[in-house]
Image (tube, rainbow, N blue to C red):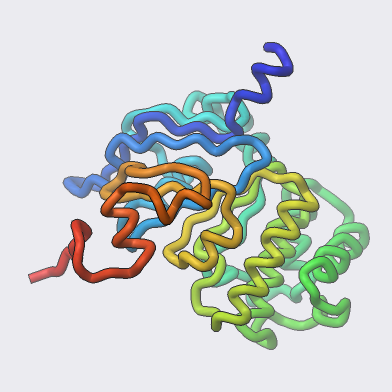
Length: 262
């Protein structure tokens, strides 16, 4: 394959991906490209399939149908060892930070370095302190337990862990959920800076439009398990799509209706 062809291959490609749980259809023919070195944000309401999409890419869930490629390789045809190698390309900031309460902060940040990359603890600790500094946290924070941190600090630690291995791909799962507007903007700025410094490809899911506008090169909207619009962030306000327009302006009236249990 030529260098030009390599450049044209998206880092992540999904084609006609279907996933259901019993009678409930969650992904219904979802297709999406995440170009190398770009930040793609998928917006959509709760229950539209955003998290299931991420889990299918990571191999935590297996779709019934479709194609999922990471850096040109079909991950659905890989064995466990091959998939583990692909997963080393990834870093992830989980919703709620998802820190290990039993480990000090530095060891949370260094977890992937120690467990997946077999790095010595002393070397891993040095990198952890360095990554904490990159997200604005002092070295002494590394000795604290996660329970001693505020929500915003926990998010910063989660981001430090996501970038600790200098990953090629980073997933951000609702990165600003539960944060006040000022801290949310701090996290958004840190995400932008971290991605720029790493040159990473990123895929984020969120319903926070302020966050999406700040961190995205491209925005895609998922609705009922499909991508219904995809384009540059500066075109989102002129999408010409009534579903997108209703969502980004938070209007109760429109084609998107809340599904309520009776």
